[in-house]
Image (cartoon, rainbow, N blue to C red; front, side, top):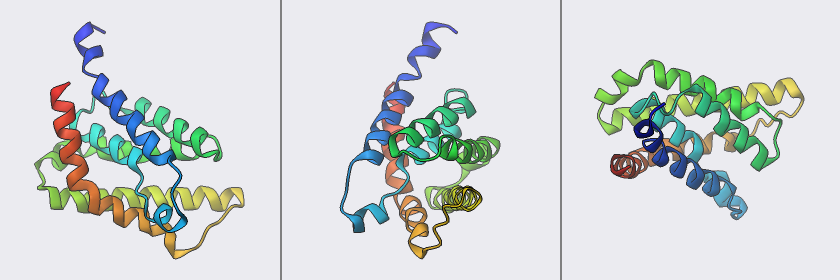
Length: 159
């Protein structure tokens, strides 16, 4: 790995750390229900826009970091992040061609798959949460995709 490829990963690390902090900030209960999965949105963005830097290993490490920050079953988010990152990486060339509104629909589907995988893992481990509020981060994440993608695009193009 040469120094230019290492230097191009600094925006990835900085955005991931900022998203992890945004995921860990304590909020009131009603706002916590609406909080999008910021770290997953960063993983999706870099899997689509910079697939070499934001690969499956990055998704796995980001999921493990989120598991340890939230105190969940170790590997729960990591497995779901890898599955979503694989799908985003698999279709990254198509997603780049979509306008932002179509990308939001694809991100909505990816976030729904993520929530379904978490629902399935929680059910297998005996911690089911069958409340309708589980789908709120999917909706807010898809609605916030255009500004987040614009912000991450500006930040990553500088690095």
